[in-house]
Length: 166
Image 1: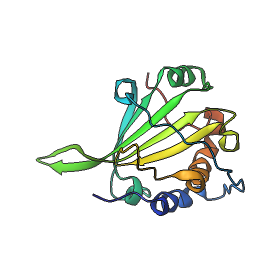
Image 2 (image 1 turned 180 degrees about the horizontal axis):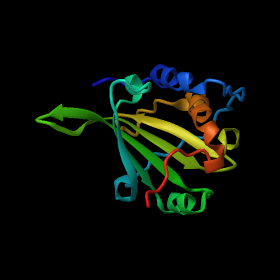
Image 3 (image 1 turned 90 degrees about the horizontal axis):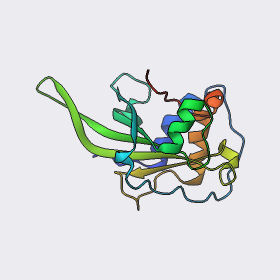
Image 4 (image 1 turned 90 degrees about the vertical axis):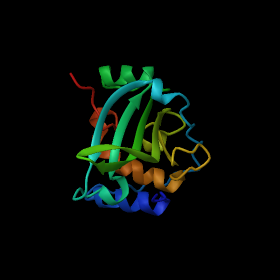
């Protein structure tokens, strides 16, 4: 299994920066908490990033997006309240017998809304847990700024990419 590192996450985010350069330096942000029980939350959507996509090297696989109740209010209103948590669950995509199935968890990405704690990144804290292990934090402060740089063009949607389906 490919191990996720800060360098891999930064490398995948940097091409997305393009003309959007972030000059904010983060102070030691409070840790984004591990989201216990997130698989019981609302499933927002799923997608697969396949070979040929610009983010395949770092984010290739099956993606599931989950949202807690506060995040669901944000999806519906367009403004996410403090306490909203969005999960990006990335799993290996295993191809066999003309089917794509879930393999090992690569990383569990978390966006946690707290306007005061994470003021320098649009009110969102970012973290990734390698293999879904709560003790294996792979983002940290410097990479969080890279996460935010990728999300910054989504300011009109409170820095989120995903949307609820009709």
